[in-house]
Image (cartoon, rainbow, N blue to C red; front, side):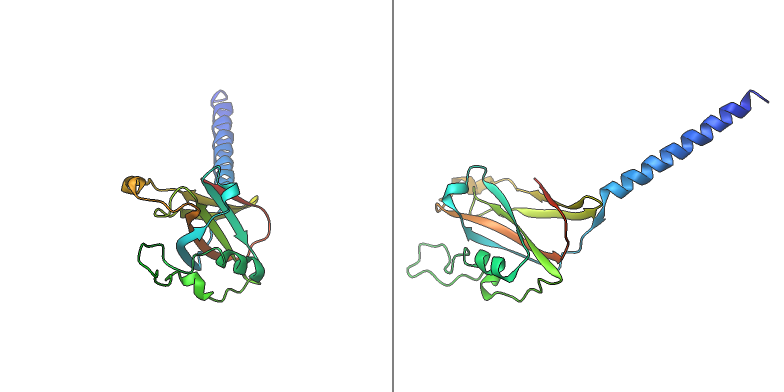
Amino acid sequence: MKALIPLLVGIVVTGCREAEELQDATAETGLEIHVIASYHGRVALDLTDQASGRSEMIIRSQADYEGFVTKIPKRQITRTKPAPPSEDPLLKQPSIDFENSMMLVAIRSDSMYVTPEFKSITSDKNGLSARITDPELGDTKALNQQEGIGTYQAVIIPHREGSIKFIR
């Protein structure tokens, strides 16, 4: 019986350690952030900064928001002359309360047809993490691409201070 006591104490202590590690791992995974609104469309690119084909933006003010909207083409990209007006909803500049909200933008410069996608946005003790995927180009690889035009997805989320890490 005396030989079993140290064995039982070891099992109990080991069991507690695993539970604590599991709890720490859960805390590190973070909480899912609610997306208030999502937009996607085409965007004019800065031709000097297209090396990676991907970029991200954090928009926390009305001035930055208006600056981003100026990069959205006002007309559809088409061979039709004259080209019809763009139907991008951000051109109407929907009101965003930057006191309580912010916008995250993922840009893809290697395609004007396939939009990047926010898969998840989570918050943990280190800040926000935004996971973005870039779907395969598929048949659009063979389509003509207008130089200087890419795609974007923008999401509105509750305002957060601290660091934001984009994971692609």
